[in-house]
Image 1: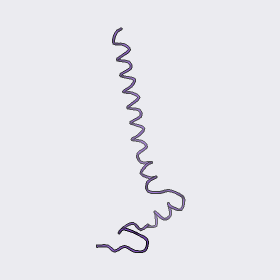
Image 2 (image 1 turned 135 degrees about the vertical axis):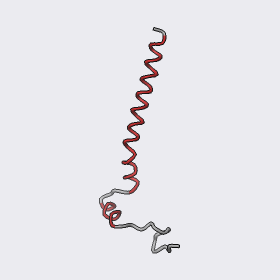
Image 3 (image 1 turned 90 degrees about the vertical axis):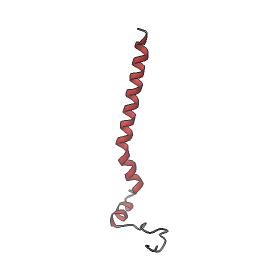
Image 4 (image 1 turned 180 degrees about the vertical axis):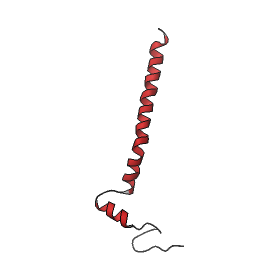
Length: 64
């Protein structure tokens, strides 16, 4: 079992070189995760737009 050191409340929560360097310029792990999810969120926006357009077209041409 790993032992904790200093102010670290759990094993493995220390920062490595990359985390320290990115932290100095304000980039955190949660920011990187959020940026990685943006393309998937945009695909969802486009899918919703297309779904609404399809439903609208179906409803407006139904009686015609």
